[in-house]
Amino acid sequence: MLNSKTVFFIGLILTASGTVSPAGALVAGIAYGFTFPHPYQLDSRNLSHFLLQAAVVALGFGMDLRQVVHAGRAGFFYTAISISIAMLLGWSLGGMLGVTKKASFLITVGTAICGGSAIAAVSSIIRPEEEEMAMSLGTVFILNSVALLLFPAIGFALHLSQTQFGLWAALAIHDTSSVVGATEKYGAQALQIGTTVKLARALWIIPVSMVTAYACKSKSRIRWPWFILLFCLAAVANTYFPAGARIYPVLSRLGRVGLTVVLFLIGTGLSKNTIRRVGVRPFLQGVCLWTTIAAASLFAIRAGWIAL
Picture (tube, helix red, strand yellow):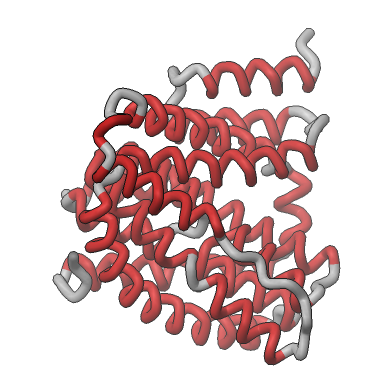
């Protein structure tokens, strides 16, 4: 009989082998989380955080800087509008549903910007209770997992172009890991656009954190997403320094494999206990906010209002 530690390491090895798809890795991780008690909960969370940033940087070695700049410039404008609407709508929904102010704000920021990373950034400023932190992370995490599996199916069913799907995933999926996982399944162009626009969206962690700190009169240190700068430098190297042309595809491939491992690790953190701790009202707020943003952005993209 295999124990939880053995199965966990088997899963790590298989997902790191490059033979498992991102969606398959997430499903395997969720299956593990619902079947076994996690022996390395905190270590797994820390490892997934580091691997995600390293994987995103490595993916930059497969990007053309000119396309990154083009997508990022347009994406910054679109994400500004999307985040503003999401913040107003999320705050209103939280009040209507009677969700505590801090939990509501965390769910709203996580949905509007970039999931767990945004929640972690602002939580150091507003100092939520442990239960509020668990509710917000659980809500965003569950919906993020659903999006990775659901979005590509919807994209194929609606015959979205690579550009359309990349934009939609970047604007509507919570975490960078699932944006990359979903767009990689859809196609190379969708992956490039989705990753770039999503990173432009993630940059909004900085001004939102600064405004939150000012409003709370907090002197907490702002967490700067330095890995986004490293991603851009990797794209610079790939575009203007052909001397490394042999190694760049290898690094980009390692980034994709690393991301697959991240999705497995994230999946292992989802369990029956996670779902129990979320609660009905915070989860309902997260679902309503996410589905509204996803539906509105999809409609705008198909109507041609949002385009690169």
